[in-house]
Image (cartoon, rainbow, N blue to C red):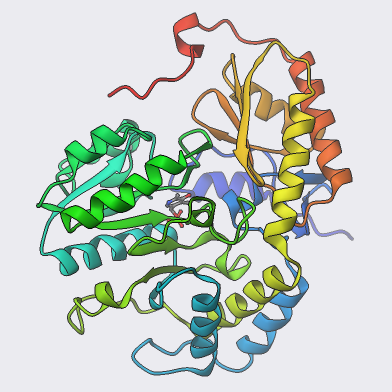
Length: 410
Ligand SMILES: *Cc1c(COP(=O)(O)O)cnc(C)c1O
């Protein structure tokens, strides 16, 4: 007698909050850059848990560290020192540039941004923020205030602020926006959700100078760009800029939930004791995973791998002679292909017809965030699959205005 398998898809759809557009597959297992659905089909995963799986799914070294730590000690609040936490903090600070040597630990990206906002208020005594158009900072009320996308933000107004969103890259607009009431300027060194757009070095460097002149903090959001993704351990290293603080999460613990706001001593020292906190932050389980993940990244020179593989991936994508492609851009293995069509049907076809998972970033862009351990052969398979769907999928009739190059409008 064979037991009937539960219908996981129906169960999840029945009980889910409803905020997600659900895919029609049930994923059950992962290894490296591959994942498998409940029917046993194998996929190449260029979603990578939204850019979490930099060291590959179920990386054996993280698995071992988590297994050992789970059997040793899972929870101990940050008010009580812990051996794994001390080890993790030393490891993290050793890979961060400059004097980003004081760390608030939390459990997600949006919490890291919330921490950054509170530390910025405490450090400056100011309450105004400057962020960028197309920027994404998370979904809690503080972080979503900095996020630009109106459909994420507007239904929940009034939010935290005031926040001024300037055009990403516009130095004069930045200079005009930052004044003696600005607590911080916060943006991503490569915008992810906003369409995979690397910053100009001149803009990041100007942001450093302007914030310093005006007594505001510069905070970079490296939640998606950190830990080798862009071909350096942190994207800020491409620009030679050290901010006053950096938000971190996603890949930091190899797949275990984690977040952090790392800052200079000058910033940390201005927050009163008890000014912020979180129960799960710095829990030994995440710390053990984080130690194993960062050591793996360093030993395997994963950032260098991402730089080389990213160039290869983008070169191969540029070789696709499709009139549907407007631009291939990115940094390291953070890659976006802007189409002259809506990207969603192509992403769906990649999943259904080619067993390749890719991610949308704005309505026109297909985003690839594969594990940095992806092989060249797997990259080839993704590029060939993408070329086929570009050939085979007929664009839906959409008004030309909707597929024109996206502008940073209000
Ligand atoms: C994913 C992301 C966040 C939010 O992180 P969560 O863990 O989803 O809360 C914030 N900023 C950037 C740049 C991100 O990519």
